[in-house]
Length: 175
Length: 175
DNA sequence: ATATTTCACCGGCATATGCGACTTTATTCG
DNA sequence: CGAATAAAGTCGCATATGCCGGTGAAATAT
Image 1 (cartoon, each protein chain N blue to C red):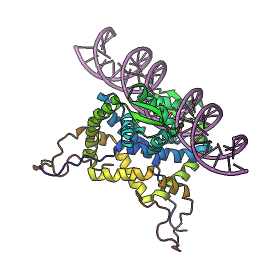
Image 2: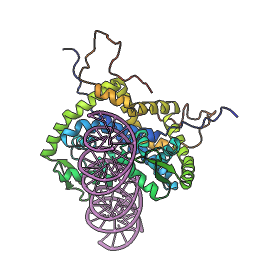
Image 3: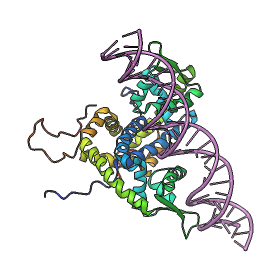
Image 4: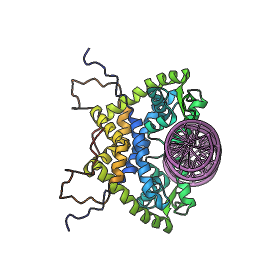
């Protein structure tokens, strides 16, 4: 009884996300080309700079990336002399990822190109919209969302007894 | 003169997109695990079914994916007997990607799991919001957007002579 | 202080994606 | 028709990511 069970949206959220990622990757890579770095690598260096010599685990968390995946990804950058991996003094297990002088220079170089890409993106997509979009993406990437996702069960029928108040499962944009 | 040039959003749109993609990939992969397929593979098979034996180029276009990348990605699926690549009768250059019986079965199997993931996603994120999100992603993935991106130059100062009318560069959601 | 558990990272294996060079077919042009 | 060009894929190389099974070092429990 009740509403006809529409067979769920035919488009997979994950597929849609990947398509957009591939496309945007192309556009950004294209513009960053002169620097010799891919958009991902440029972003990686930017994060390293921003976090100021983070440990690999820290960096991986920030990037929502698997630790070992990060390790692999860092290799080319280390090989090309943009970063160094130095064991932490306090905790000899940890390794700090640091930009070399060459790395700093590269960041500065890509910064210019990156801004072009970023600007074009906002021009084509809309600045206001872009900001909201990024917030949404940040929400999806957050551990809060992961938690909500795991919590989400089939208990999707509208509740009557508002024990805790309104919309229960939907993640409140706590970003 | 004019407004202070805010140094552009510090967060890279591309980075944000990738982070969300990694996270969502995890969540979906996790749920699809019992099927032995990754979310990407499941999506791939779904697309093949939906397009009903497309050529590789067709499929690649649909997926916003590089042709050779698609070729690589298909290999494991062919090896495991879920698909076949048969040269087209009319054009012997083209290869049609088709689901085998086993492939069809796998699609059916993953369909169930996929729906769980999809449902959880919508529960955690909000159904309405998800729909809009997907539309936005589709826009970004569209060639329209790519065009707008390429067209977008530094000519971002507000124009006075409204030659063609309002907001010029921002892509009208033609999706 | 020692045994146990936890943490941080590495290495191997596998998929995901892109690029550029090369091969085979079609298409188009003169 | 024959040469030039375009189209569809393939292959090798390189990065992007993840999982799993070690290894060594810190933190905890006994």
